[in-house]
Length: 74
Image (cartoon, one colour):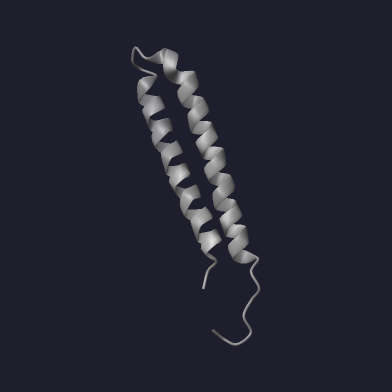
C-alpha cells in the first residue's frame, strides 16, 4: 500500500500543475486583449504554482519510491 503522504503530495502537486496550465492558457489569450498590464502578475502566479506543483509531485514520487520493499510477496 502506498504511503498516504506520498499520495497526498502527488495529488496536490498534480492539482497545482493543472492550475498552472490553466493560468498559462488564460495568460496566452489575455496577451491579445486590453488587460496586458496584468500579464506580469499572471506569469508570476503561473510560475509559482508550476514550481510548487512540480516540487510537491516530485517529493511524493520520491517518498513512494523510497519506502522499504516488502519481502513477503504482497
